[in-house]
Image (tube, rainbow, N blue to C red; front, side, top):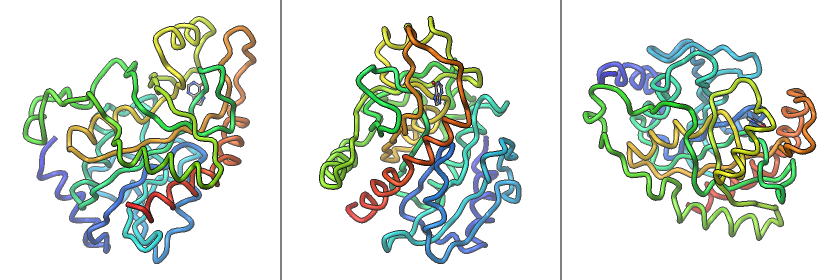
Length: 271
Ligand code: HPA
């Protein structure tokens, strides 16, 4: 990775009118609708941005959208890159570096995840308090990483506490159930076996998914305050496990999405 390449991606977006966004937002699988609420939107398809990885998965429309939400300038990723699609972790996290270069000061991340904690139900939201990286690699494992931030990035508190507190307050006010817990990130794309779900519970995970952790590591590398919310789409009970139904996962994500949108919109207002 080089600063020159990053600057070319950023300059392309500035040329399209992506002027100093304050907040970056990553929308997860089945969670793209917040993008439709952006006022005065300017769109850039991933495939048109120099040096961006090429978008693949069919339920991701794959674009960056710039505009205004709650009176603040935002840049939203509608669709993200996953390790399981064959990208390396530098590609997966490249857009985070570009959004930071555009000027964002805060990052919000969403994802769809399976509920490991038996007290959590599908359709609940979970505020991520901490994570376990089970992707077998790091987006910071490259030669010139120290040109962009600390190689040995601190991860003692990866999720911004003031924004977490603010989200909890908003959820309470809006009567939205917001669980709190640890998110484990696996490679996928296969779902977990019963034995793997048991292991995830034992090691302290409350939810499991296939994204977010690489992006959060890079946000920490860039000292960019980040919060992340999981939409729990399925209950991963190893003693009562049914075959996975991806269309149901996407449907539950879509049904739960309005609550997530409410949380993010209020958070934009408050920060
Ligand atoms: N496992 C991994 N990723 C997921 C799951 C799951 O059960 N549900 C939604 N994303």
